[in-house]
Image (cartoon, rainbow, N blue to C red):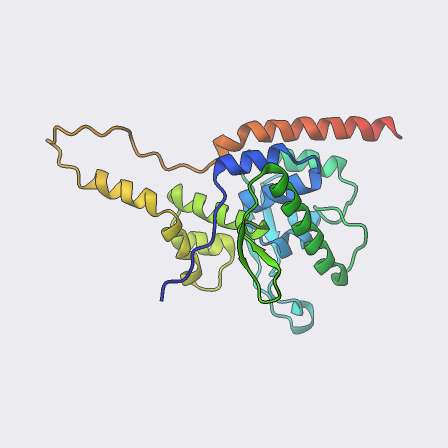
Length: 247
């Protein structure tokens, strides 16, 4: 039995949805998913105290064990912060309304985590619809639609980009915090087009008269996100001006 592969947003889709986002909290949430590969449960619990903006590292506490502080069990990991995203995160900290959590929330406490996750998912679906790229994958038993793309999709974007960039699959496993390598294996399947192109190039006869039309380029999509990254900086500069103007 072949397991169904998760959907992955293309770089064109990512740019479209980012272009319609006016909520800076949502933009930062999306970037944390794309560049750090965080689960939404990890994003909403991410605290500034666990981010080193000097060396560019984030300590991610195991979000899969809600009783970790009671049981003493929890698998934490250190994730490097992409050099393109680091300046944005530094500026975001300066203008953020919440000095404890990276993604501001009205109320603190573990009981508010589920509500924060749901509201983030709802806002993301709203922006996907606004960008015209939201699709219904199937319907649940109660008749409610299950959408093709959601916030967890950003984690798959990160994993696929890491694999395409040449990162070892065992390193990706540690980067994303998977408990077993089989979960990480999906990124090999998601990048099958890259593997197909690589195999054709690898077995091309050296003296062949058939010229390769283009070189195989396996790179992450951070270049495609560079323009939106600059737009984000401008948005935060405007926000900073507004904050100082009201003080």
